[in-house]
Image (cartoon, rainbow over all chains, first blue to last red; front, side, top):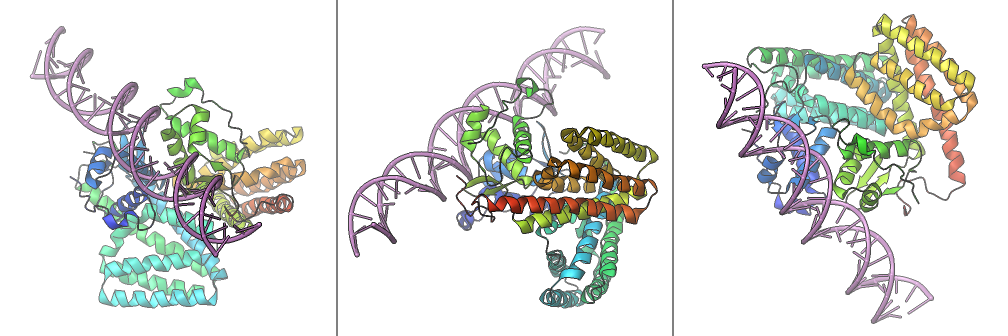
Length: 244
Length: 244
DNA sequence: ATGAAAAATAATGCATATATTTTAATCGAT
DNA sequence: ATCGATTAAAATATATGCATTATTTTTCAT
């Protein structure tokens, strides 16, 4: 059984003049990224509708929004399922992410204002603190800010959008790295090299280091995924098993 | 007044087990790319519902799908509008597209099978024929195949998806280039260099040439857009004027 | 007892109805 | 005459109902 906890804060009804479909989509997105909704999980309209106390219409809309982010897949007349990645698809996602991060790093190294560079450095130092404390939750949050700052450093809104959309897709598989304290430390070491490259405007180094930074996570996720595949009988190919 | 012609081929109802929302979205997408629906145009649910003889529900779904492609923007409680690009946003889109095409070209030059390389060459030769005939419509179609072949040559499905999604966004502005026969010829010349680079596995040349190939179109579109901005009083910033 | 076919159950897809929000238009006041 | 407020009309957001499609279970025949 799934655990869909939140009951849509009643105050947020008119809090931001934003529809409940968007809230619901955000909630589901979070649950998927945080791992509460495992890949392959079926998302049934009537169930979600009852759970959140709304009609099927906004649920349906939320599921469509979710499908657009590629975090879920919709099969006509057969429902919506949380996306399930094959090892090949996982590799493709990480390679795309690495290429995009490298691209962003290269452009950011060339274009960031001095204010932006200082801000990046500031985030980097705050990250050092979370590593020292071993606070992996805070690290994850700050790490997001770190990479966001890089994306925005390209001064190209479209590229930011594209990169963020791919990051959302890989997010459920990036998370596993933060379970290891050792990875936290080496991730931060890599950041150090990246920050240095950016600050001195070394476009090539920034690009290459960021590529490697993402691909390192790929290796970890790949290992994690293959270790999972041995225990449960769940097949790797999407939707071939009964999702119930 | 808009012209929404098509009346949803009745045969395709069960032709591909595809819902009418998807068909409608495709139709609207085509109309936007082809210029039938101008940027800034409001897309009203009741109007479209009447026009296509369906209820508002699939129309609403289609508009949401369209919004996901960024070809249209949805403002809560205020309707859906065809995306309107500022010069800055246009530049951002083309730069992203150029970077992605270059990336694809680099990976394709490294990974394409000999069969894929021959297929690319074949398309290139067919393109030569359309240039000789001055058939810009056929050129546009084949040109799409040419670039698609490149994307697929990366052997990375996610990268293909991402690149295609950005291409859809810039498509309305790429089209203008094909109005010029001279541009057709120079476009094909650039293709020649790209094909050569790919065939000899020159990753750097493939990347650089493709970047330039897209950016050339940017310059053309930029000129075209600025020439447009002088005649109509329509403001450049999105949705600032009353779309009616 | 096993396999296939048919019927029942449940979920999706589309349509229609209701409510809330937005926009505009008109009336009044300064 | 212009600006502001109130009201009316229209569009969006949500809810509900109906029809179609998939899936599962049961039954019948081999």
